Length: 243
Ligand code: PXP
Image 1 (cartoon, rainbow, N blue to C red):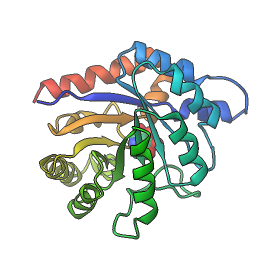
Image 2 (image 1 turned 60 degrees about the horizontal axis):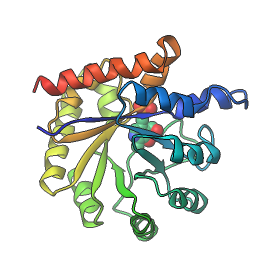
Image 3 (image 1 turned 180 degrees about the vertical axis):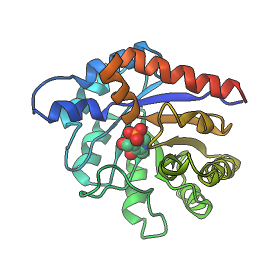
């Protein structure tokens, strides 16, 4: 059984700060508390529109994080330049549309992948591990494998929307994870995972990393980041042990 890493996405700590364009709450302090509570990594998404995390946050996190930093980003040149210069442990490439509330679907790898290949090569040169955020769809996984990346992150959004009424999306995630692992890809998962729906995903044995943000930051507003991360860790670890 692979161990399961829990990475905390702290974007929405910055969302609260940006609501007033002030200096609180500080995402770096949130990262410290998440790490103290046992997070295995810190994830941030530097969006092209800078709606939450700012350039300075990523620069500070690059030195403050004591676990590992996972930067989510799209292919915008200024964002790629800034992140590549910081040489984070991992970069997760995601699609981005300005009007979306959050990342709505995985990367479309059936389209022209010229720019994607360029960015993957650049990030590999600076030593960052590259992961592609994709839907749990077998042909897309094959295309990710063909691009030569070491890892993929399966988009759990459809599962998050349907888990109360149907097992289909969970079965699709399980099939996708097994297929990807069979190709030698490291399998990550994330988006829309909550304290209520995370356990069945954590039970999928091939998944080795979860990226969870909104639900944890929401809980942290009520009980603090340390407690929120501790609770999620307990659920995830119990699910993995139950296998
Ligand atoms: N993984 C990826 C690639 C994402 O884009 C996001 C959202 O920024 C997450 C995980 C975390 O999603 P959520 O905030 O719904 O937990």
